Length: 293
Image 1 (tube, one colour):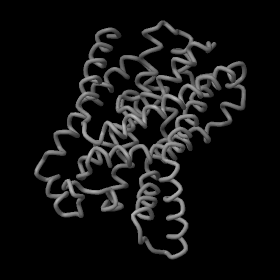
Image 2 (cartoon, one colour):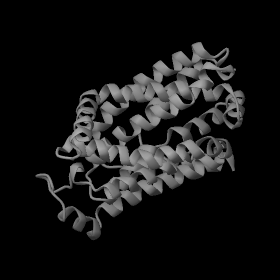
Image 3 (cartoon, helix red, strand yellow):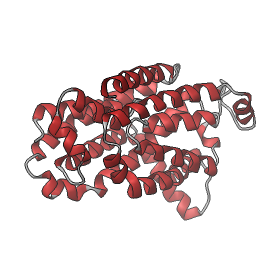
Image 4 (cartoon, helix red, strand yellow):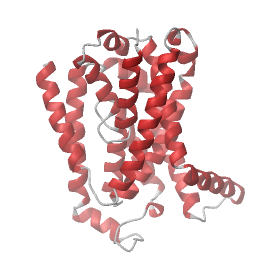
């Protein structure tokens, strides 16, 4: 059964690694095995367990932290969507951003609805997670490489740019938003980062790191929240029996960690890149492969 200490550790792990481009799911598979938490490891790969209920609390807490951090942005987006529905036009950057998020949420949401549980159970093994973590590191390096390619520079030059010469998010086309939503579906694999692969997709279409991160975090909010609400019966039902106090504690820790993470990362990506996170994933993934092979 889940202890309070385990709930705190896993809650902090979820809150930090969900937003850092290093995969929360991959870390939640690898760390319990390293620490010898055999009950948690068994619960992760079970079709029905208390771990499902625990994930509900962590997902909802993480999404609420994101919603609170971007509360003013979401207020503008929601107002913009309402006005846009009334006028049947898209006239402002907030309206466009809102519809870009709606469009990107559809493929990622459908993939999660259809595949999340089966993929989580199938790949809930440390060796698989370690392998995907190495792949994630390579994807982050690819994002930095492709951003410097001439093809991407031509995409940037073809759209409105800011004073620094970068493409702005409000110049995105809907087909590009769909592509980012499709890319995010790969985060269902333990070791592939939701924020990381979304940022890579944004960089490949000419966004700078700051706007790529912003779009990634905004897009993650409804998807993570919906995933938690959809599985609320697991928390309220038999899977949650006996662990709800631990879930509450873990969720509070996850919310605080997520808020600290998004606050840090929004500043970090104004001037820095994905490269340090790529190196981290490659090193940790390789060490984990050696450990569990």
